[in-house]
Image (cartoon, rainbow, N blue to C red):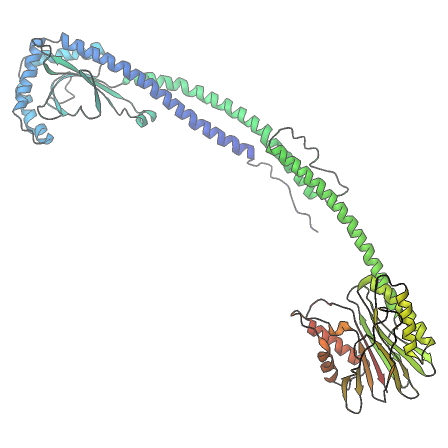
Length: 562
């Protein structure tokens, strides 16, 4: 048998590598999220500090601005916006507010206020500082004065959307939702600080609008990320090395030992005398891998024991088969070899046991005075017990018939009593014993529970059963009588004898061959000679059985008178 190749590749993407890579990926994702969450927390804290500072700057700016000029600027803008149409935002943006702004622009106070706002931006390190007033009737504000020309004078913006009020101020943070911050987007903060009339502290006339692009806190967060990211990478590598060593020691190494043991065990041809592979794996962990190793070791032990038992059973079976084969040859040697031919008649025979040895037997022998005995018998049971009882029965029958060749009833009586004496196993024999006389062509016989014989008459050219009452089989009960009968077999006549293995032959449909098929097969070609009759009958039975196992021993004897 060709040995299968079980070699391994020089490099394999091992289980440990796969597991450690998965762990590294998970840790990397966790590290990234950790950095982003930490950055968000840092930015949030900076935002809180920033807006507080911006609000303070805005309230201070509201107090430092020229109160009179600023109030007059707010009042002029409010008055200009009061006459605007308020149908839509677009109409307000395109027409009225721009028109109102153009009326405010020539005011000499505007330049002074704008310079003051620019100073607020510079001193507070802000991005932009504006004065704003609400457009009456709508939740919008427009610029009254700006610290730079980048934002158009009179632009309408919506600061109410996405903001929240804290006391008397409005604070907003652009793109301040969690997802944006976690993805590293920058923030822009703004504050609306209220501007009250110096004459009436409770009258709100406008807002100081301060903008910070978040560059400072974003820069601090970037520094934090630049510092934190390498630290996390180093920690990630340390975790990977620890995880790899742990997985290698706790998972990969035990599995590798079991894999090598399994490969060695599968390649080992002698699994009885060869070395063991799973008994000394040295797995010390108290986990499922240890359980698997113990199970493999137990399996190896059980297979070894099973192979030893199987080897012993095989030897015993081989020894038994050899003994049965010898027994079969001995049994065959006890039976007549070939045909028995004389000038006036011939005897042909056939026996096929269902097992190595069987209980059927036949015999024919010269008893003197021109007479020949013909015997066919069937011992109850099969196999070795039947073969042993057959040997005893055959010997007793031959010895007794030789002594009582002219009185077969007495011969059978003595044979029966002999077999009954020490028959503890209650075995019995059906037997047909006959003696043919060449002088007067008579055939004297006793049927002790055997099958009905079939006689061929040359005058009619056909076979028929001899239907008579049978005596009890021998060995079943002692001191019983037997009936001797006689027929004449003239020239051309024949007698066909058989055991019940022929009638009980079964096909795959569980149908029996039966007596009718025997008679039909014999009459299909009545002119055949002895060996041809037996050979054709055996072929017919084989066709009928169609591969079905032979159930019983089959024996046939054919006596043909010339």
